[in-house]
Length: 224
Ligand code: ADP
Ligand code: ADP
Image (cartoon, rainbow, N blue to C red):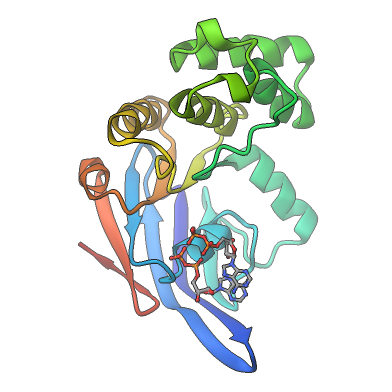
């Protein structure tokens, strides 16, 4: 069964009195361990789709299911909880907390989810080691390279063992070689943890390495 499912999602925005239909019945499903590329020109609605899949926005119409649970009409409190427990997010810019070490950045979301500091630190160490950052645990983000910062952001995104990973241009800020190596780590994590990953990207070679490619065209998704 798909871990992430969107059915006939519609989203409309109003700009200067005009209705803009960004999504006009977008449907997709992502299976466990699968990484699906979301492509399309700037302004096509990729971020909007990720915000809806990530329970950050509600669609005007259509269905959103995470691990079989319909979410589009759940109360905010339940959606927030699902977001914490089931979803991981990675963005183009790492958004790490500047005053905290790499380790603490991975510990914090776990403590917010109720894990003890000790257990959270243990898991953070494991994740950072797995991403090749064991020697960087105590560094603040500003002392890390761009690739290292994105690796910490990956560790943070999966710290609470989500079932769905949503990424918006996760390697968009990195040079070609670094992007490739960070992507390889991300793909490895998806494969070994059975996460369902939806990744918006303009990077064609990386999209080619994913399992499938979906393009947003005129508000609907088409398989490439
Ligand atoms: P992409 O990520 O593919 O570049 P977006 O989802 O960011 O596309 O945006 C798609 C369109 O929807 C754009 O025209 C954008 O200006 C508009 N849009 C997105 N979010 C909002 C919003 N909250 N309010 C009004 N318009 C929005
Ligand atoms: P991207 O680089 O991924 O296309 P954008 O800069 O288009 O990102 O959008 C960043 C965020 O701002 C998204 O969450 C999107 O929904 C929101 N957004 C985009 N356009 C508008 C808009 N016209 N009004 C309000 N929010 C917007």
